[in-house]
Length: 136
Image (cartoon, rainbow, N blue to C red; front, top):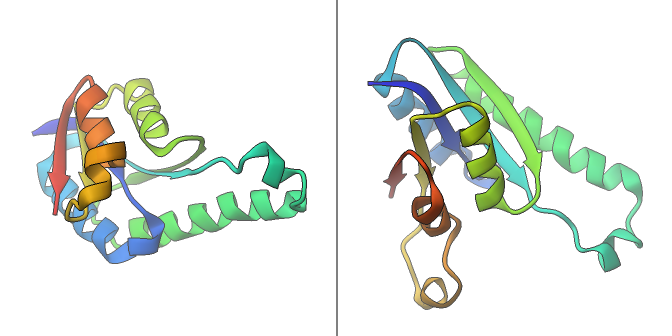
C-alpha cells in the first residue's frame, strides 16, 4: 500500500486515465493522497509569438477541466495538477514535491521511434526516485 500516488494521464485518452485512477485507489493506504497530473507541453517561442495569449491559458484550463472529469469518477479524494513544460520532467517534479512513493503512468505499445527518442514513460522510469507502475 502507498501513502502518496501520482497518476500521470494524457487527457486525450481519458478512459485510460480513469482505469489508472481506479487502480491507484485500490493501492492507496487509508488517509493517503492521489495526485492526478497532466503536463501541457510548452509551445516553442517562435510559435508563441504568433499565438494569442488566450490560447495558452485556455489549454491549461481545458486540461484542468478534463482532469476534474476523470477525478469525478474516483471513489477517493484526488488533487488535480496541471503543469507546463516537458511531460517527463513535470511528472517527476510533482512526484518529488508531493513525496510520492508511487508513480502510475500508461504506455502505448513501443514502436521503432521509441528506441531512438524514448517515450515519456521510459524517461519517468529511468529517472524516478520512487516506484513506477507502467500500465499497458
